[in-house]
Length: 325
Image: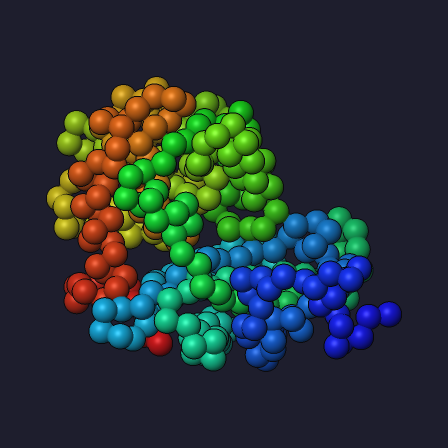
């Protein structure tokens, strides 16, 4: 049996340090070392994928402090997701989770980081598709994570491909929830296109209309207006919501929430993705077709510039979106 002292050594090889090593994690009301943040092997969520999570970013501001972007909205969505999935009796209030996120960033002494709260089911109810009572657990982790698709992607744009994997039908899976199990769909799509040499997957719904990317919402700019799929078919992204507000109020460009066909992508002036991880990422090529001039477009880069100034505390008008740490 491995002892605590040599638990990071297996078969004579020393385990390489991971991106999470040395950090603290909040688990059910307590801060513990990442190495001690364990769940039971028979956790219902591990076996069946029932759980809800959030992705939240904390940014270092230009004034030297740190601020978490739209923390309240993320915590609200976490609870909405749980309600949709009938994960009731979360043992902590929204306020407790809100404060735990702030404290976690402080304890880890992060200036900028990615934050992952998750609500999952333990093992007290046993295993099986149906269990009578959920053993609801809550954990929050955080780590330093740069640009999701790379710094160059933010500047120059990415190459995307429409995946052969369709996004699930609106009544097959509760798409308004950010739930753990549904991301198998995204994993398969992402692997498919990355293995083919592309950066990101674009997914169509079961009717053949553009839905979203593997982990981002999608927008197109054409003929003086911006268009994005309606919420009836996509996750209600918080960065998506922020982008729409910025585009309408600051850039004065109309936004339509309407269905988009695949060929509309090809002839758009610009295409871009939004998400907590991806932030505002231009798309320069889809299915081996250049989008616009084949590089990051001016509208996308303007939106990106406004967005980064907001998250870094340079726009007082949007201070309501920032929770100071």
